[in-house]
Image 1 (tube, each protein chain N blue to C red):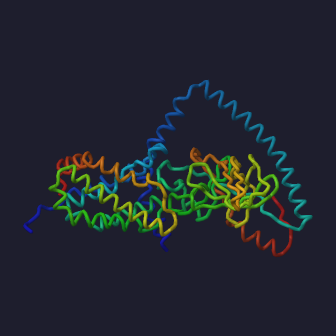
Image 2 (image 1 turned 90 degrees about the horizontal axis):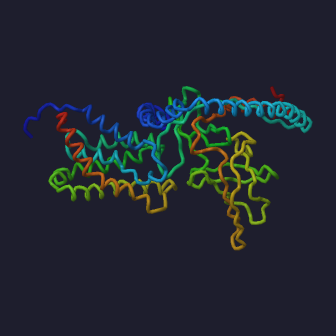
Image 3 (image 1 turned 60 degrees about the horizontal axis):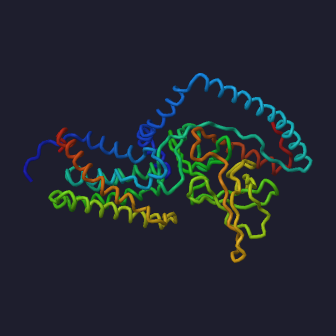
Length: 258
Length: 163
């Protein structure tokens, strides 16, 4: 009930937040307006090559996806493969300086729900905690009260990544000293816990200290997502697919991708 | 009490709180965030002190409630602390008005520190208490900002005849 009160009164706060973000919006707009023609042309060129590369990779991806589905059907296991996305913009306002939270300009109007994962072009950013009517608050993976189940991309070793409260840095608190983890290892979501979709990049290991006197290694990772810069964020709309997946699993029939 | 002229200028009070909210939300560089004065608490103290018949515990509660919604903190946390601040400045308003500015600033330091302490206490309950001394910087900057804010608010109050 209280979350309903919160989402309702967020409508009162929303106009103020919009006003507070005007300076940074203006800066962004001016930045766009004052670009030289030369810069725009070169940027355009870069986007075109990027687009070509990504499309080429996507071609390979479709065939890999098909192969994956075939193999999984042989193994009689199913997995959801496509996730629907919604784009939202962050509102440039400061919240509590001791938390890592952001405000986005989509809310329950756009069927945003609590616990919804958000990501940017580079990796997982966090999840929605207070969906409002027109805007929502999201908690970043670096918030000290946030934890995300991950696995090491290289060997599939599963662990949990905790936020530190410092911008961009996370820590692994419970891997033993002899665990197979190296500098530069990519940590991806494991999909355990059912909140984050599986296989998205979360962080890269940047520091490992193995103190024999301590039961666990102290491991620091840097977030892959551009947590402090991303203007556009992606919201994963996957809730309506979940029950369907469950029923398919119980029937034991493999899922066919689209 | 004698007869009081009809109170007006409620819109000015509303605007002053809106500006305080915007100053609280305004994005500033990471390194300066810990120095941001508690604008909302300061404006609340001013109105409770200058117009105790108009602003009081309820104003404090409402403003704190909205602050909770903005910050995503525990619902009612700032509502409680700002109610306490409003009550104390209401109780002390006759004295605060007579104090010289320096002494006023010290009272403001005391009130803001108290509200921060209550917030820290409540955050401790929910297990998210920040552990370093920089948490207290806003109290000091609030104290330093107070004289300027006081003169500005008084000028605005007199200009628009808020009573």
